[in-house]
Image (cartoon, rainbow, N blue to C red; front, side, top):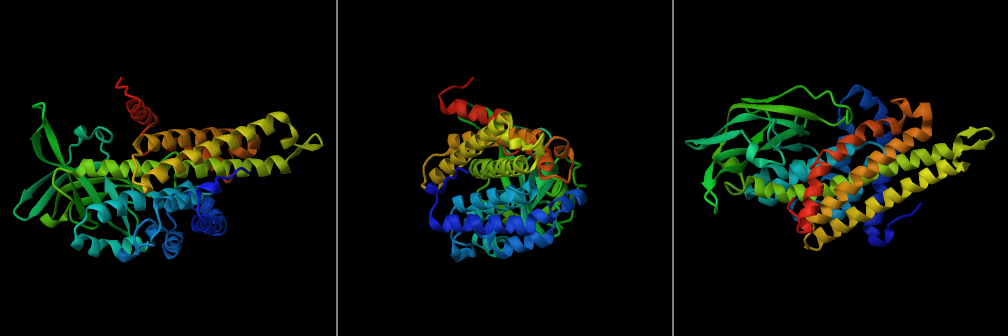
Length: 391
């Protein structure tokens, strides 16, 4: 198969292979069982922690592995080949859970939370999305007010990944902490981020969603009723909660694109294997031109998606602007995963409609790749704006 090794160094190639081997030997054999049971396999998460995957893009002086963001994305892609749910647990655990604490946390906050998070002994979640708020931050209705030396938080959040696992240690929530007048005189909400430790009275984790796919991924609604936490749980500057999250969101889109690329790669590998093994009318179905051309298109999608996220990730690491590139990678990757899942299922025929088949799971899982971390339409909006278009 076509590879993009020229864009990787020796350490990155080695890491990719290590995680790929782990995915094939540990994750893949258990994927169908846990998907059916709809629960996150904590023993696999623990092994990922032992491999150092949660600490990959963080410096050693805080307990990380001293790698870069490309390395994290390579790990996410390798896992997504066999199980998207496990891959997104890593992607969200790092990008939405650890990054805000590492980047904006005080020394006390970092010393308290980072050791277990970086080691994979704990997971953190980020509560942004609400019924009327996500990409539109102005729709945020969760509020936080200061009473003495405590924040009092009331509101609700939706679709919060890693928020209800046995090792979830905290949820960082965005909340309206006041109002301010913009330069045009319009009054706008002041949004801040506040750390809410798991088990805080008033924080209720709702039942896990009954999702189309990503059955193993831990995803819950949250309700906050008179939740009280110390004033020192403010994460970063007051009023900078959403602005700080936007950077994490842009970075997360690159990792999400890597996840989508891994899913597209997994579909290609499964379909190619089956096309070689399945014999109809005396020859393998891969000898039929239509099937061969379908597999060729699947390979082209994978390669294009991989180059897109690698380009965005390398720009991020180099300190260059990458917002538009991240949206391109997210758009291309999500569409590649959806198209390859559809084509792989068609090549498998009836077998592709059985849940025990990996391509069937990819088919169910892939749709969210066009929705999560910003919908396809949001990516098109970002790309259009990068072209100077505001329509």
